[in-house]
Length: 232
Image 1 (cartoon, rainbow, N blue to C red):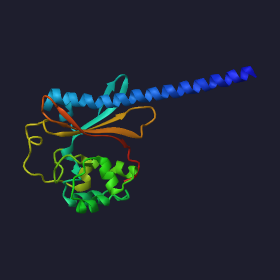
Image 2 (image 1 turned 90 degrees about the vertical axis):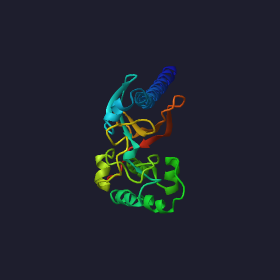
Image 3 (image 1 turned 180 degrees about the vertical axis):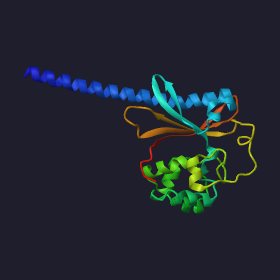
Image 4 (image 1 turned 90 degrees about the horizontal axis):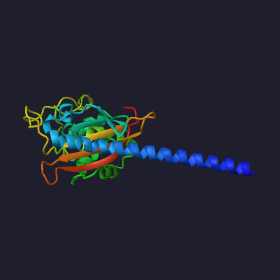
């Protein structure tokens, strides 16, 4: 009887230890993911237009942080559709190309009624009553922080261009011309942990490089986004 109790106790102890170990691994992995965001920020601050995150806008790169492998994509939000300021036609085109995603037309409908700017994605999803599974499929194409009526043709991803067509932009800005600027720009930094079992979410931060010495950057958003699982 005593032996059975001891065996049960040992088994329970192993289970707790395994759970704790799994918890600790997850914490370490999340810390590595968060650290990757700051690595990108600091490189943008230090190297400016020479940074690889400028040269390789929107292209994935692998970083090794604290023996954890993460995938990082940094892109200028000028290549996205700003829900606050975009031409309604672009929202309609986006909706048309996300037909399999329920409620996406709420973007177009709400754009007509909206008289105030959304300051966060939680406000946006709550206002549109969009489930997380749906929002995760819309998120890669929209932003709240570009202030543009249309995405930059130079910075727009191929996938978004296929959805809304080519964009004829106004005269090139500093970001789009021969001189690339970092100051005043907002960058979306997506970081995904590379694990044996695919992660179902990723960290997405949007950061403005202010150019100020006392306050060199401003985090505009910091969200864990579910991976889109809805076929499009």
